[in-house]
Image: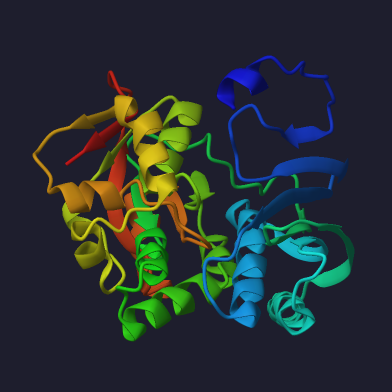
Length: 317
């Protein structure tokens, strides 16, 4: 995809404040000196068995990109691919789950589009609002910053373990609870501080999204593996080989950008590439602001720091 996007012509537009050049979470388009739109789109196949829960997780995941930019979502359009002869009760559950999560976010659903497809896919295009001078981007992390993360890792491994029938109910529920949690509270908390850089950690995993932040900011990000918090059961399932295809793809793509300072266990290193669904926010800010944000947002914890650019964008400790 990087190779293809590099070939797409850029059309200059002074109102495009954030485009796809830095692989940021959402696009931002200025309407007035005081108002800009944040726009994003995301959808995926079912990762849990319950239709209602799948719909709600899809909505939370779609909303996350707006929160990562510091925006406030206000409208959405649903996107659905569903079998022509599919169960209508299941379809109703998916749509209800999504609608309830959008209601929680105070984001109106204006309509959507559906097609017949043997493989179920569901998600939303979301629009939010933001002040043009208050956008949180992934390209402004500064050397000396502390990195905070707001959720535990492991949703990809745990949902893969669920599909293989080896996941414990309590572990699955903890992962579901995490995926259902909106990044709204984390977004509102961070806006009280001088956040230099922010991104949400989703399909490319912690290393993949940190790599994008490091490359866009021309810095190196050091990740302290001893500080990473994992969802219950994630390390066990990783040891058992419950690795999603996306994890393997992430590792093949991003491992060349990683310098390992110490030897890590295979399962821990793999989880740093684990694709997350509705993952947390990775926030770059000063030591002083980081300490205050940790007090204001107890779920936020330190995972590393930003240093001057080295040979590779990511350094694992």
